[in-house]
Length: 357
Image (tube, rainbow, N blue to C red):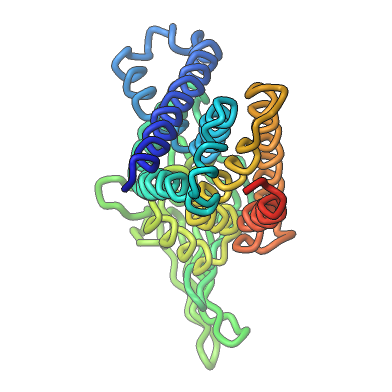
């Protein structure tokens, strides 16, 4: 690594960390201001608040890393251009492509760290963070969905009229086994209740009908223990659950939802693909950041930094819009998450054709 590479890499990394620190500090102050009334409640222990922000800060820092590395790139390059350092580098015989090497090296370092944290470390921290928010900020969750359907297996279909997630009691339960469009067996109960000690459901006032070639066999009783495909966790708050899942856990969740015939797999697929595209996003934004700010401007570095913020804002709109389209089923998730990167890559290549080299 040459002196120039070390110089640019060091400036870019230190500026990136400084920008992350400033933005995270602002977000934390705003978050504390919004939640101060909840924190002042006597039932909220101080050590849980400290732990909450120990989990919250890495999550926010990693979430904004593509934008902060872009802002850092614009600031560093614009500052070098204003001091005629870019002109001196190019005049010494170093090509513009060669000058991009330390930028892409820095982007690679940030992308690898971000991918690892985003895939495994941050989700584990988010489990604790979301637990705190559900317990002390959002309040008790009530499962309000009625007529709950689940495909328990390729031939079994489970139904609940309603479920009380605070007492773990379900009402009007049926489990049907259908083979080749023909009902073979039906188990029903007026009420099911979760037994935490046995990890099974207690079926109350149950009845089982088995369809035989000649007639049917009916049995019934007051109470029966049974293992079902559902568990009480299925009726707890699923809000932003994808943030708490590591990449392997995301795969398991997607497979679970698909195999049970439930809705909602799209948001987990979007989250999974989004995590894989984030490293590429870092490279695209660094590339555009260098191009935007490498020319010396009469307006000074302020104008170039302002342009950088505008591009960041446009990129965020692209990401939010494409995720919304994917979660709404308008665009396949794997395509939607790549749209911002592809569009900005094309824009970057177009801008690169006209950058002074």
